[in-house]
Image 1: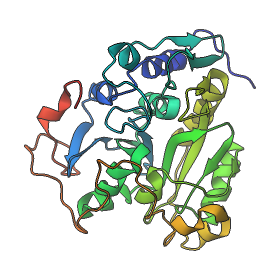
Image 2 (image 1 turned 90 degrees about the vertical axis):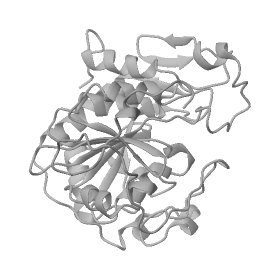
Image 3 (image 1 turned 45 degrees about the vertical axis):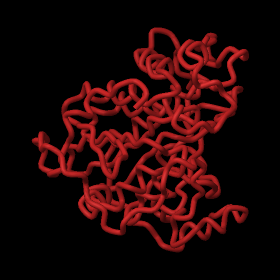
Length: 322
């Protein structure tokens, strides 16, 4: 059944996130900081937002705040000193499509602001929410998180992960974080097909023990000025994900050989032990090597939750350009 696009509170939230500046993650993190049941954290210079779930059978919901157009990455031939280009996009909106005015050499950032909108809408489901940074340059924040034994245990204590960061409609991928049982569950509950494993996203690094799926959410031509988002596809994906999120969750553990059975062979050189540990870091400015047992940076403890992660009050409001 096609979802109505009229008077949709979900689409209003989507629009809010899509209109946030492409070139910085500040507005995304500020928005999530409004929910004080979660906090912004820093590990080895990498920011993330985490809200612990309250359900006993909680799962982890994931999106990333950055876009490929972030002015830290400088991956595209854009005049980053030109305020008109950086912050005055001319979003084109039709009844069913978001795209950008072609005179700007950027997309709209639906990858992954559309996923952040979904995470925001589902933040009160009783499940945990993780908003990462630097996914577009090798999943640096996710990789840094996994260097902390404390965080690694917290992440993998969930029953499984859902990430909202895939182009197209009605499909999902597990990368190295899958099992036959998990694949079957996802296919049955969503009606979506699983695609062969290619490339990487945050769950590629976070899924050491538990399974995860990255779900298509209706954006197309990502990483190009032709990027667009189909509202109908996004809304139908959200309704499907919402049903899964609000259902009962059993724990699904990774099968080490699962990824090799479904890998796209053109990406096989990047697959090591079921995860994309050698995924290319496309930014020269960011170091992808971490100490094996990296700890959270010492910060003033203002977190009242039982997970004992320390938060940094100074990170709750970021200055433009950070």
